[in-house]
Image 1 (cartoon, one colour):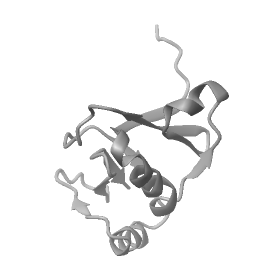
Image 2 (tube, rainbow, N blue to C red; image 1 turned 30 degrees about the vertical axis):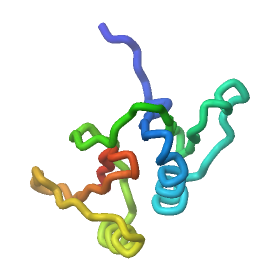
Image 3 (cartoon, rainbow, N blue to C red; image 1 turned 90 degrees about the vertical axis):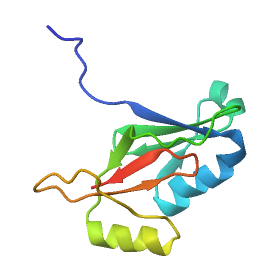
Image 4 (cartoon, one colour; image 1 turned 120 degrees about the vertical axis):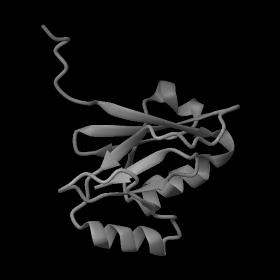
Length: 121
């Protein structure tokens, strides 16, 4: 028996309200995600929604949220890992090497302005 889950609809990341614009720049300009309009009822809360294939990333903002340094993360698959690493590094992002390499898997990490960990594979 299962709950019948068939796919992800969205992933949500939260950043401090003071870092909202920096986070929007990170997800749109640095990572190249396409921002999509939020429903009218959600527009007054700040943040942004991004579409990537069938899945959305919801950027939320909140007061009292500290920058995080945990290992919970989301993972984006890229066409060319070396090119992605070069691009993100040249855009000023600190590249974090894989702390737990898995044979046959190539990946690295970056953090968004709110400290959310992003795996690039």
